[in-house]
Image (cartoon, rainbow, N blue to C red):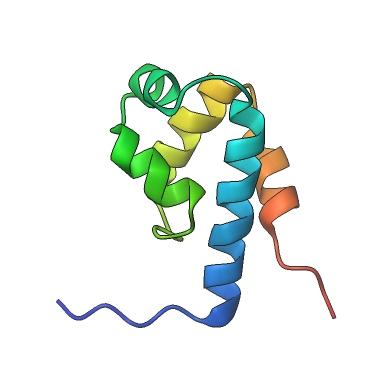
Length: 83
């Protein structure tokens, strides 16, 4: 299966998601948060650095739950700003 290249907007949204998750993680270790969410530390690292700009819904939901973020908040803070 061939994957359609991501648009610049999708990449930017992924970067915002990563920055938001990193900020919410605070002083907690990447390994600790990843383990609590049931994902690998490498997956969390890729999301936080924008290398995985379109993570699976359930991965984002698990991380949000561990970090005390609502999905509504994530959507609002990661959505593209209208020009």
